[in-house]
Length: 210
Image 1: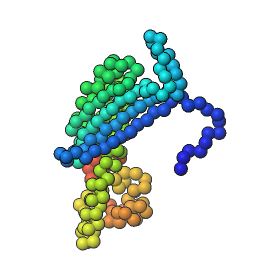
Image 2: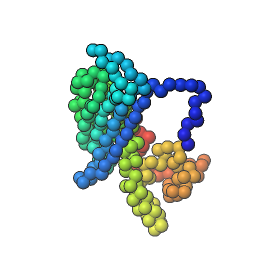
Image 3: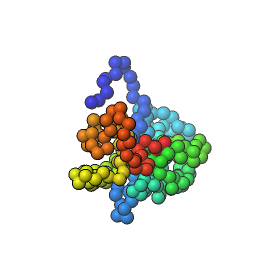
Image 4: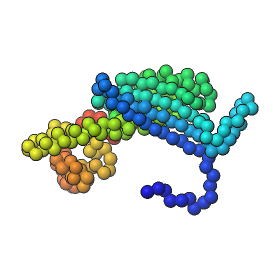
């Protein structure tokens, strides 16, 4: 459902677009390729007497993270197509290699803020990285389905899987006492108000991205 129309007349001034493409690699890892584009809805003068036209990117940058099955970053590459201060902005790109070793689901956003705060990084590139934890979770959806099928098979045999799927308790729809958990993950459902221990969560749950 779209947003309702504005009740007040208005003028478009800015659009920010973010996009992520994910790829399964032949070596068993995954690539997340993120892109950020900022455009203005109006022309404006630049230093030197030139005019920046409406719709022409003010910011256009890319970030590729390569991750393992447990969401650990093994490679990071940043690149710029457009930035207000040209090479002075893009010169920070190599520094984002320092994301290697971070884990997308274990305090990732806080780690990025600590490493690339203020003059140590690019505000927009760091902000682009913040959308990658949830994108990574979606990237692993196929793996989760296979795990769910395996869990269901174990449940039919009377066995309980060793680990609770990490996305349970990761959002309000998948609380352990949620009707959705009861429907799709009945072996991990906990009746509201029950003191029963629901199981051991897989390390690196989706709520710990920071």
